[in-house]
Image (tube, rainbow, N blue to C red; front, side, top):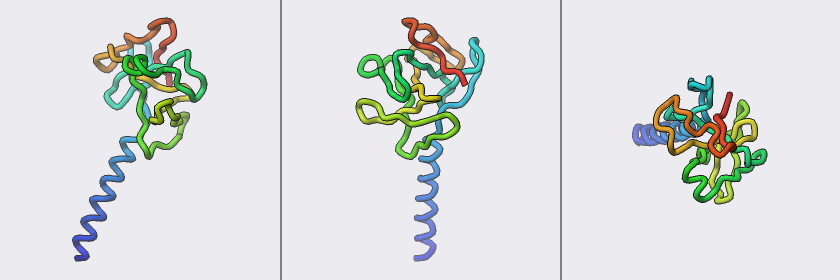
Length: 126
C-alpha cells in the first residue's frame, strides 16, 4: 500500500509541476524588427495602444484576430510580467502593465505581420 501511495503522490507532483510550467509568460525571440516577446510556439506577441495599464480593450472579434496570451490558474507575476483579468473573467499575461496578444496572420517564428496594423498594434519589446 505504501508503494501505491508513493506512486500516486509522485504522479500528482508531476501533474502540478506540468501546470506550473504551462503558466510561464513570454520569452524573447528574434525578428526582422529586433528582439521581441514571443509565445510558447515562438510567435511574436503584440501590444494594443487602446489598452489602458493592466486592462484589455480587445474583446469579441478583436480577441479572435488578436488572441490574448492566456495565463493559467497558477500564473504568478514576476520580472515585469503580471496577470490581468479580462472582461470575460479569463486571465491574460501583461508585460509592464501592457496586455499581450498574438496575431492570427503570423504563421511562423519571426513573423511580425501585425506591426502597425491600424496604427494601434505593435510588437512587444523586452
